[in-house]
Picture 1: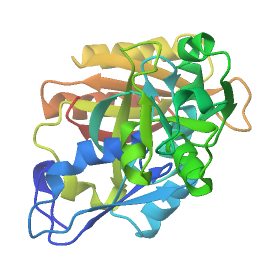
Picture 2: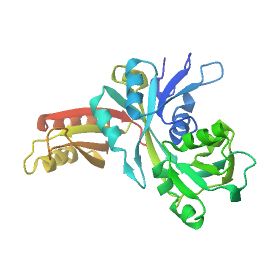
Picture 3: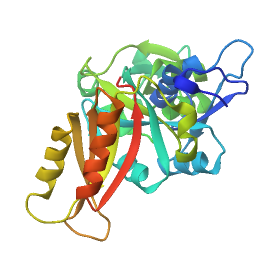
Picture 4: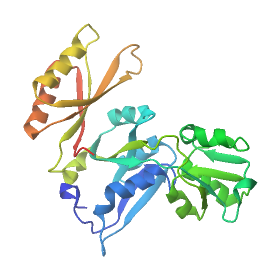
Length: 293
């Protein structure tokens, strides 16, 4: 596989692990982020759906897939905490970043009329993002399901005529459903940030000359001023901090790992920032360099 600059042409198919079913937002993000990695005569992108995020990492590290695509943050609901933990635990690197506009549609078995519906299935987060639609249609009972696209897969497989799913448009295409209502989400400015992940040893194949952003995890001693000092070191190196997130350290109550993202103008600035953190912090792990979305 060759992917220099993040835009090389593949001689074989690109296998991509996602968490969720075919037709999900993660599926759409994978196509959007990696569409330039295939071409006529080269292998197409093959999506490998996984039931849980831990399985995505397992398949990536086992070499069953080439890369993975996972969400890290939603503009309305915040970060995906589990994915930060998994990034720290496993030898992987972020190599690409992209934003996906989240749009939800009401999808049913073809031929079903809206007035026949009594239930709506979807992931709890999707249901929460479509509260206005559900409030305006009290005859519809919102029922949590494990996946947005999975809800459409389920109702199509069973031929349910009183049930619809709330899912992306791709789910209707994937399973042959009919869209009865479009754009159900309460807020139009709803975006999810996704990352492409590769195995740490193959990060060089995905190196991007346009990288201007870095993700780093670090820990500091549990005493006053240590976090402030770490952030001051980043500022002294001239990088622009764009995000900070904390996660608890398992088995060590009230101690935390900090995840930061920062932009840099020069590669030397990024390297200097990491060196400064290493001199001050108990643990530093570079999670990846990539072009900011």
